[in-house]
Length: 329
Image (cartoon, rainbow, N blue to C red; front, side):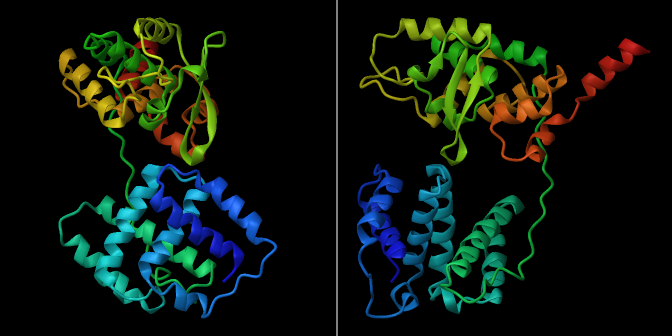
């Protein structure tokens, strides 16, 4: 067994025992120790790792060290765990037909086409990794076609609708939370992990950690600054988090709690649309683009890897078209 492979396996096992372990640093330390040793095994790597669950753990541990978020890793784990339970055979024995039958049976359960597409993509990534690492000779996913899903975004809130939504924010925390989501365009998990020390009040910017543990700078406007300061000054706790629970012990406000706060704001405002954190992010991006912000700047603020992702937000609403027509006709 290669030293690197041994390090990954040890790290994955420790990660299961100690969920909050910094696996990247542990793996680096183990690899450093094993560098001066010849690591051998009594049998071939495939024989040692013929259990699919072991393969999945090894794959997830590798992806963890590559910087994938915990949310993404959990999604991968659930999908691959379901697949493993259905297959009950060694990875090198799985054929393209096995995968097709599995996906067809899964589709019969009534799940959405988007779910099947996501499932397929995760399996494709898993088997591609197995092939690259030479655990299998050829991926059974090579002949499985990618399911094309038309990307449809729900309509962003108009500026009038967002003003209506603002009326539903009653508490200091609700006002600060809504304005932060809108001003920064951050993802839900990015707002959850925000820390007070990451706010630069002079430059009106916040350092956040996005997908792949990549840091970027987002910005807060004057309205957000006012409400955020009021909320933080009202607190008596010493928690580092920007948004915290109201009940003791005070801790980071979790994703579900943030979603519930947005639900409350929506209900209290009386707005007819279904509002959720990602729609507010979409709304912010749409408003920036409609106001003339360069799309490359929007891409950087949102933390998108590809410009094509940002371009989805670049659709001009019918109201904007009508407004332009009335103005110039």
